[in-house]
Image 1 (spheres, rainbow, N blue to C red):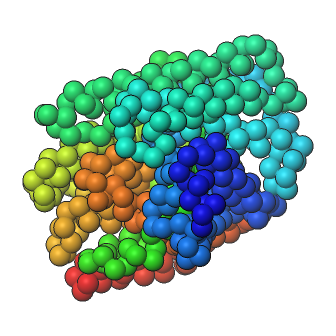
Image 2 (cartoon, rainbow, N blue to C red; image 1 turned 180 degrees about the horizontal axis):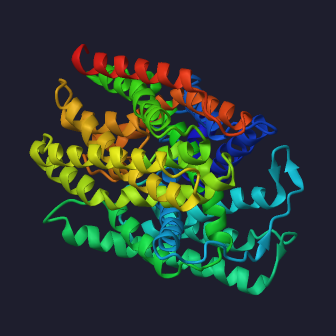
Length: 512
C-alpha cells in the first residue's frame, strides 16, 4: 500500500505509464479474444474494465472512484474529444447524402495488416496507442488553460501531461503503412489535432457565455461546430488523428470509464433509490435496443445489420454500437452509415438539451414540451419504418429512411423514457441517469459527466452508465450471430428480449 500511496501522490510519470498499461492492453486483449469471430471487442472491454475496477477496490489497492489513480478518471472524462471526431465524420457523410456529392473519396493510406498481436494489425495497433496519447494530451492541454487552479491531484502536471501526450501522438505514425504522401499525411494529423483543440475551446466559451440564460452542456456546441466543419470539408481525406480516434477513441474512453464504474460497484448499491435506477437501466437496455430492432424487423421487414447496427447506434446515440460500427465490426456498409446516423439525432439535441437544462433548473421534467416532442418522435418513427420498408435495398433510400428513424426513435427513447420515469418515485437527477444508462446514450453521458445535473450525478454516472453494459454480452452476441448469418438478425430472440425489457422497466417504474 505504501508503494501505491507514493505512486498516487507525486510520481505522475509512473501514473502515466500505469494508465497506459491499464487501458491499452485492455483494448488489445479485447480484440484478441474476439479475433476470428464476428463479435465486437467492446463486449470484452465492458467485462474486463468493470472487473479490473472492482478488483482494485476489493484487494484494497484503491478506493471507489480510483482517486489513487487520478489519470484513470482523467482519461474517462475525455468523452467529448472522441465524439468530436464522430461528429466531424458524420457531418461529412451527411453533406454527401443531402448534397448528392460523390460518395467515394480516394484514400491516401493502405494500412499494414501484419498482426503485431493476434487480432490487431500493425497500423491498428499504432492507432490504439495514438488514440491513448491524443486523448490524454488534448485533455491535459485543455485543462492547463481552463482549470489552472484546479484542486485535482495532478493539476500541477497538466503541462507535462499535455506535452507527453501530444508529442507522442505526433511520433506514432505507422512507417510501414502505404501512404501516398507522408509529409501531407503527417501535416493532416497536426491540423486535425489543432482543430479538435479549437473546437473544444470555442464550444467551452459558448457554453459559458449562454449559461446564465440556459445551461446547455459543452458537448452540444462541440457537436454543432464539428458537424458543420465536416459538412464544409466533406472531401477531406483523414489524417492519422481522425483515423486513430475514429478507430480506437471510443474503446479507449470506455475502458477508462468502466474501470471507474467498476470501482463503485461495492458502495453504490447502498445509496437510497439506486436499485430502481440500476434496474431500469439494465432492462431499459433490452427494451429500447431490442424494441427498436423489433419495430424495424416487424414493420420495415428488414433484419440486416447494415440497417440495424447504424440505425440503433444513431437512434440511441449508443456508445457501444457506435464504437463497434466505426471500427468496422459490422461490415463496411454499417461503418459508412454509422457516422451519418450518429449525427442526425444530435440536431434533435437542440430540444433534448434545452428541455433537460430547464428541467434540471426546476427539478422536474418540463412536461408539455416533452409530450409534444414524443408525439413528433412517434410520427417520424412511423414514417421512417414505412420508407425503409419501401426502400427495396436501394442504398440512398435506406440511408434516408434510417436518418428519419435515428431522429424519431431517439426522441421517443429519450423523452418517452423520461416521461415514464417521471411517474416513478425517482428524483429527476436519478431519472436522467437511469435513462442515460438505459440507452447507453453517449451525449447525455457527456452532459452529466460535465455536471449538468450537479457534482453527485457527475461522480455516479460512470458506475450508472457502465452497469447496464452487463446486458451488452446479449446485444453483441445477437449482432455477432447476425454477422455469422450473412448479416441477418434472428427474429424470435429479439421479440422475446423486447418483451422482457418491457416487463423489467415497468417493474422498475411502478414497483421499486
